[in-house]
Structures are given as structure tokens and as C-alpha cells.
Image (tube, rainbow, N blue to C red; front, top):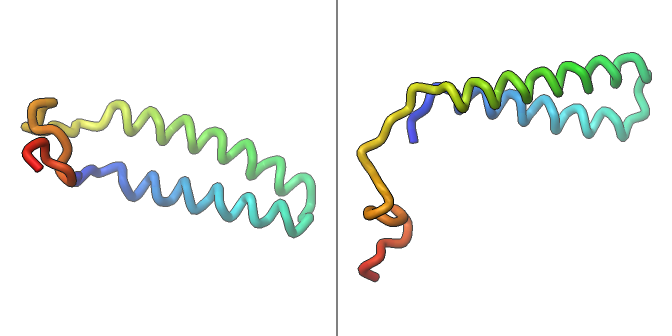
Length: 72
């Protein structure tokens, strides 16, 4: 799957994982609050970009799964 939104998904995931680690460090509440708001906005933007991505494929349900063909 070669999609243009994969880097965005990686960045948002990394941001949210860093956010979780920073919470455990008991940093300033203001910083954590703004990072939480930014994370929610990033998630909404990421979902929008994934759903509106111009990705097409020639595969259909008759092709089954790539890692587990129906014939095996």
C-alpha cells in the first residue's frame, strides 16, 4: 500500500506516544493541556486525510488476502 498519508499517520502516532510519555513525567499542566488539544486536532485531521486520500486499487474481495491466499 503506497499511500501519501502514511507519513502523516506515523507523525501523529509518534506525537501521541510522546504525549503519553510526557504525562508520566508530570510536566506542567498547561503544556500537557495544549498538547492534548493539539493531539485531538491532529487525529481529526489525520482521519480526514485518510478518508479523502485518492488511493485506488485493482484488487477486490475475490482476491482474498495477500498474505493468505484462498487456495492454500
